[in-house]
Length: 319
Image (cartoon, rainbow, N blue to C red; front, side, top):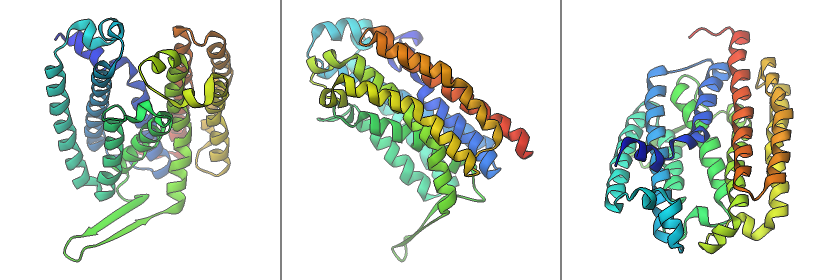
């Protein structure tokens, strides 16, 4: 297998969905908590990227194995297209999972047990999203789990990696007595959840757009996603709502004192997102409609990150 084929197998072009929560997590830790840990942040980024590639490989592997269409296996799935041995794919998945586990254990030693708890839940969602007898992606739960595990999970794990002096949530385990104690700051945790909502909605919309586009093929391959149950018209309404949800949370967060005024630069993306949302509806279910969902993700979150970055000038925090 060539390097280029490997990049296709892990679908490296799709990693923006995990990159944005990571970037926003670092920036939010700096602007709201005033803290950053560069070395552990880099290590977490490596582990996050490796695991993201693993979940994509599992997805391609399971789609190949469970496909009812031979045409799909040989012409649309990268494993069949490139003739990649299934045994090699399994070995890569196993090795990269071990690498992720090693990084996770190290970061748990640095950030506490709550990091392992949240990280473990995110990893389980990532693995069972496409693996198992009834994967989450083949049920009407894909949008919820992908949005929460990436939009909230990666975001809060990044913050936990960076914020050590003022953790928003802390879990203490006493193995000798068998007792545990969970502590945290309600307001800090609420701020994190609110700041993650734009990420959750934009990432969920990527999965929703994919399922809206692929409804016919999904049914042929026995994938009964949310769109199968609610129909395309209702799915489009949900897509529009999620596309615009982030703007409401930005305004609420600013009024609540979670953000600084430069975050308003995010609102400049509104006309573009609205235009892309309309174009998505008009071109659905043509394959090119999916590009508008990607453009929305990139446009909104790029300006969201810019707003947080500019806020560093207002806070005046030195790192």
